[in-house]
Length: 497
Image (cartoon, rainbow, N blue to C red; front, side, top):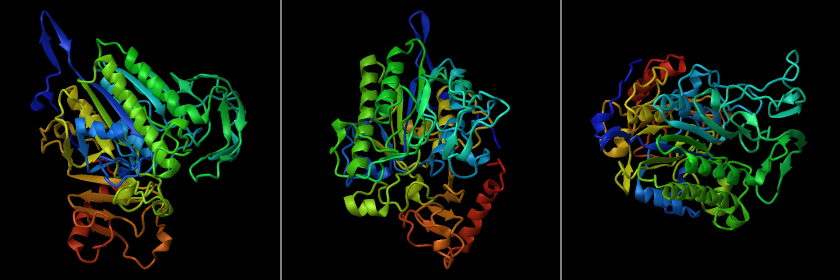
């Protein structure tokens, strides 16, 4: 593992400049908006055939840079969030597959470097607003008894021993965030409670039953504990207002970092009345349109505050859309664009995500880039922006600051990337070649037992075959060998590059 000391002056963006008789910081504000289960093909700027209006994301693309080869480090929620904040692939943690649910303990260990800690040390104001989904250490009323019993983590029967009135540990405020306003997990996973600075904002006094609206497949949530001030249908609006409040009230003498993981368009699909019927892709499409409007509200807040010019605003998604073949047939909308698979899969549709960035002071408008980017790369990029060393623990992070500014440096640009599916299937990409260590999709699209006669692995040339339809495993044994050699240390748990 090599430590990369990244020096900001090589990209000609000074962090500090002289201003009359005093020194004034010009370090940019950084906002990282992470959509939940939104596909590459949902955004009009990336897919002319999208059946969903996304005017604000299209505007963001016109005013900034669009990345066409950006990927989440996992095909599902929790591990991607881990990688985003730590700069490490999540399989280096205790989570080797799947996701966490609402009452599981914190995944990020308290001594782990995070993006928030890195920026806070550089005098940034730091905030986390939205969906956490990285585990929390809930307090017990009776420490001699288990936290809960009955059922399973997805459907807990008895949670009487959870002390919701006591501050949780292991949350954002223990990991470098000055301020946080979160829900513990996804909007369909209990407990349904707002935590402000790791403290519940209202009493948790009842349970809601399993909910399902048969008018669309994505309008449902699991049963579980719910707080008195929690309404599933208004969570997106609530967290958006909290994010805007933070932007509006932030101290102008300091830059800020806002990590804003949305609850949409993950299930339950709850577009407000204003957005119902807005798209031609059903209720899901309407919820995506509402998600786009959230981005517009953040852009407006930056303009009103007079800080848009020196704010790096990044929009991306935690994985591909949970859009099934039946949905494509019904609506003729390809939420994951031209790519095969969906959320959960190691195929491209599971992890190739929209990524758009705007920073008027440093990014030329209307750019497109095919630079290979992973969600783990936020840490190294922020380190380069503030001219600080990248923490050694962030061993899977590469700066894309050069790609943003048009000053790409071969020394910092990644040349390969590891993909990981919901069931823990690995794939590795180097250049145009991608090797999948499985016969199927690694997720929900094509389980392994449905393709017994296929070769043991899949090899695709993504330049010639972006839909991954022609398995070249038998034709190029030397490339299979090379990529397996490259992948082996990751599978073995070796942290070396």
